[in-house]
Amino acid sequence: MNYQFFAFNKAMVKNLGNVLVFILIFQLLFFRTEAQTTVVYTTQTGNFNTLNTERNFNPPYAGTYNNGASELAQYCNGGSFGNTPGAAAFQTFSTTGNGVTGTARTMRVGDRFTISVFSGSNPSAGGRIGISFRNTTAVTNFFSSTDANVMARFQIENTGGWKIYNGGTTRENTSATSGSDRTLTIEVTSSNTFNATIAGTTYYDLPFAASGSISQFCIYSFGDNNPNSFWKNASMTNFGHNAGDGLRFGYGLTSGNGTISGVISDGVNTNSTTTTLANRILVGGASGSSVTINGANTYTGATTVNTNARLILGASSSTSASSPLGASSDGTTISSGAVLDMNGFSLTSP
Image 1 (cartoon, rainbow, N blue to C red):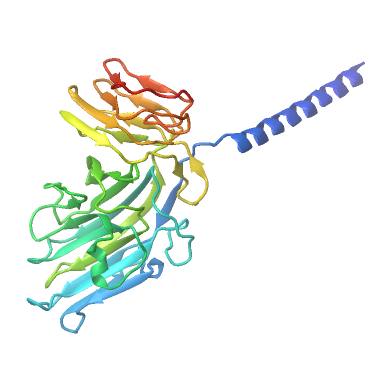
Image 2: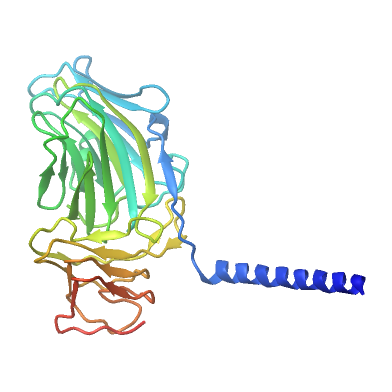
């Protein structure tokens, strides 16, 4: 009797184990897990694809070197009018953080790239120190660092603080001056918009200066007598999904309307070119402001309209696979005091 009871329970345990294995396999096949993935970009010359100099004639002097095992440094000095030196280091984004040996990948919607920089003082008159984000890996010379293929760039000049240059506007954090470590962050929020953070201050819904996807970043210095600059703590992470912050729109609005026309899609793990993540969006803004979304969006996470925010539809959908509110079965949450304005348009249910 006791033996039969023991055998019966062993069978139950075995069957339960089989069920659990089946459930696990089913989840792996049909559901995506949302995991924060971070790839470290060690700022060393060996990880960069191309190092260029301009007018490195001894004098003037320009170059890129390793400052220890985790910092990339640049120098430009000894120049004069018409004979200004420059240094640039170009690196392709990849699945490993190494532009030379990793598998190339572009920045996707939901990707966040962060890097820190130190310069003891501002560049010399007419000079610049910065990092640019380019839609190609083709490099002609030093001046590719700020050419027409640059989609956005962080830069500091002879006076003032660090700035973000983008399509049509320039934002400056006047308190983020030289003399201290400054952390710079770029977040891709749609096919043509991004958020940028300079030393803790975030600028939302910025348009890219060029079309395409970000394939490469470039660290550069150009000036007659620039201070040495030091770059470190670079990484790429996913932020748009449920385990992250989500894609944030309208958060910088105090009044008026902002329009998001780019496609908001799902993300891809930063260590992969194929493993997708369901992005979600959050709409913010002060009372009286509004955000219009009119893209054929394909993200599959939830949509949340925060308190006081107003989300306006800018288009209808004819299919559940794409709409201004994505292809989501997770639904849309309208917080207390928030508004979803259909604006005369209609949506197809997923």
